[in-house]
Structure formats: C-alpha cells, structure tokens
Image (tube, rainbow, N blue to C red; front, side):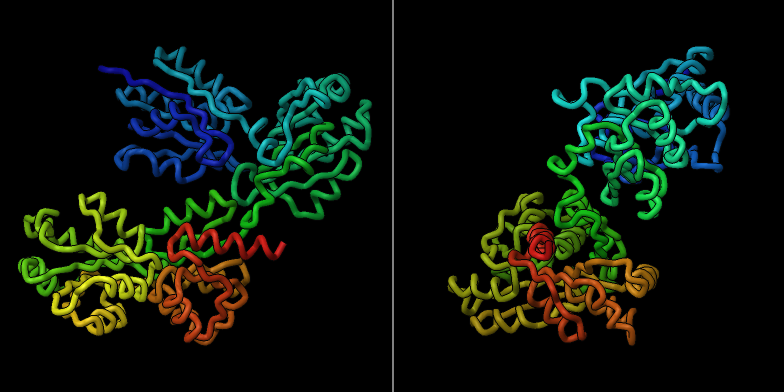
Length: 506
C-alpha cells in the first residue's frame, strides 16, 4: 500500500496573507487538512473543496483532541496514502509542538516535510510597531512560553538570567500568567519602569495593543478587559511603538463594517476592507438568482441581429447573459456585429475576460453617465438590448428613448432578500455592533430597511456609505442619513470615501 506524506505547515500568526508561497502550494494540493484553533478561515477556502478538513484546535480547558490523538491521526491519514497538511498557527517548531509530531512520524516511517511559518513572536510585535531588536536599544531577544505553570518548582525558566540577561522578552500564550511574569521579572532585577506591550489578536483587523510598564501593565490590561490570545513584549523596544505604529492607526483600523453586497460578491469587497484595516462583517442583504422564466431573454439572444447595442449595467447582468448564451450553445461571437456598453470598469473588466472590449464606458459610472456618453453618438433610430435585474428602475430606458432610440429591456436575473442574514444584521445594528453600513445598490437598501421596519432609526447609529447617487437617493427616501458617498462609483472608490471620512474625524 502506498504511504502518503505529511507536511507540517506554518500558517503564520493570523493574517492569511502571511502564509508562505510554499505553504499555500501545500495547502492547495492537500487531500487532508488537520488544522488548529485561531487560523483564518480564508486559508481553508484556498484548499480544494474535496479535501477532508479535520479541526483539532485547543483552547484553554477545551481540547478537541489530545496531542497523542493528533499524532495518531497524522499517521493514520498518511497510511491511507494521502497528502496530509498539518496546518499550524505561527511556525511549527516555535512553541507549536511540531517537533513532537515530527518525532511520531519518524517512529512510524512516515515521510514528512516542514514548511516554516512566520512566528507570532516577531510578526505580532512588528504589526504593533515594535521591532524585537534595534541597533541602539536591543541586540538580543528571547521567545518564552507563558503557558506552562510558572509556579511549579521545576519550571524550566531561569528568572535570574531572563530578567537581566536578555534585552527583549517575548512571551507567547502568557495572558493568564501576566501578573506572575511581571512580578518575577521585577523580583529578579528588571526595572519597574521597563516598557511592556500586550498585543491581542495580533496581525488581525481586530488587533488591540495595551502599553505600560512592569509596575502597571497588569492593571492596564485588566482595565481594557483584554483576553487571550495575546503576545507580551518586555523591553526598551516597546518605546518605539509611538513612532513606528503603522497597522492599527489607519483610518479604518478596527472599524466594524457591515457588507450588504450579494453573497457571491462580498468577499472581494471584504478583502479590500481588511487591507485597509477594517473588520468586515458579511451579511448579504440580497442574493442573485436566475430568472424563473428565461423565454424573453432567450428570444432576445436568438434575435441579436435585430439590435445595434447591448448595454450591461452590472457584473451580474454579464454573468446571467453569458449563462444563457452557453445554454443556447452560443458564445461571444454572437455579439460580433453589436456595439457594447458597460456602466463602469468592473463590468467592463468582466466583459474583457470574455473577449469583449466595450465600445462605451462612461466617465461617470451611473445611469446618467451612460446616457451622456451615448448622447455623443448618433443612436437615433437604433435598437438597444438591456439585460438587467428584475427590480431595475426605468431611468436608463427613458434616457435612451429621449435620444431617439428604442429599448428592449429584459429580465436577466432576480434579486431576492436573504432572510437569515437580514435578521442577524438587525440584531447587530440594534446592539450597536456596527460602525458603518455599506450599500452597493438600491436593492440592498430596500431589503435591509424592510427587515429593520419600525426600528429603522437603529441604522442611523452607524454611518451609512453608498456607492452612488441612485443608491443614496433610495437610502434618503427610506429615512436614512447618508454620511458617505463614493466620489468614484466603484468598490475601490467607495472604500476610499469611507477611509477619507474617518481620516477627517481623527
């Protein structure tokens, strides 16, 4: 029987972008993924949908599996002839018990490979603006487990040497023992005024850092209600945070932003928000569904020679139209004699992936922009096909008609409310857990407002951000105060507008 191989892969400290290229390659070819607590779920999304996922996470007082059971699981899965990825937070060999797992694999004749990861011992302080070494302040650093019972008589920690023999001390998994750690360091000669930083959820959007000294850090952490997981940094390098802080002082750092975009489109927006420091909460107010009756759209596609133009007003419209082309055994060649319009760069980009370069993309990405762009061309007497959502308004149709052209508007897809998501959104809004609500279409406004109903004012406890004037007008008519309006009607433009708003508030 073929024996598989185990890869001990370090996933990094939390930010999914910090996994190595080789680590991601291993993850993508895995047959089995054995993963820990605190890993970002987006890493698992990168793996094959057919890969077996086994959670073996450990939290204080709650172990899904013992270490012995985890070791046995790795051996058993490898003996099935499978590629097994042991996905571990940080680095497998830095306080991660990867060495014990490797020993078990050797004892059982299992091939293995170690893919190092970025340890939280250096990455988390870096994200807090604290270098663990500095030419003028610290030439040495030590990584120490803060998880063991530090009160036991046979502790492996030599407090006498730790207190004064190393410049920077980094304690991992030490929140519970913080009072004891601080007391021991002071008892054995470390100055009471030595700077200390406690960094919770390091490298993640929700990162929080509390800074103090050995004499007061325990009180400060308690006042801030900080809970594990956290990294503790002791040493003069902590003073550099004031100058080098970069990750958690951005305008959107820690801001909880409700993403009401359609489920399949939310992830790209969420990723952009994370890159700007925000904490996105994906609660799609709408979902995109195929139209119940494709007859009208199919007839339009079968008679494309009757049209001069097709205008696409969304990425969803492009996707739905091409789905019907495929079902009718057609492809992009069917549009060869037509001119194509797109409402903005996102829609144009999707068309280009299908081999279509739009003839018209307005400078302003709105209905008015499309009409203005078409006004510069002689379209009188021409016929337009407009495949759109079932709830689209008639402004574009009226605008093209005013230019002397004829429009056939057909339903290409439906927008439907996501009831469960709307209920969760309502709960979070009512208890004040949302800082900003993003609306990317009028339908997301209407569906969320309907769910909130008589408690609409609860939405106004959060800032409201809209992608364009039409969406903002829908929000205003629903009784909402629009605080942020994108200057450029694109997703990046909307995120920039939100960032600019909070930058001005600082």
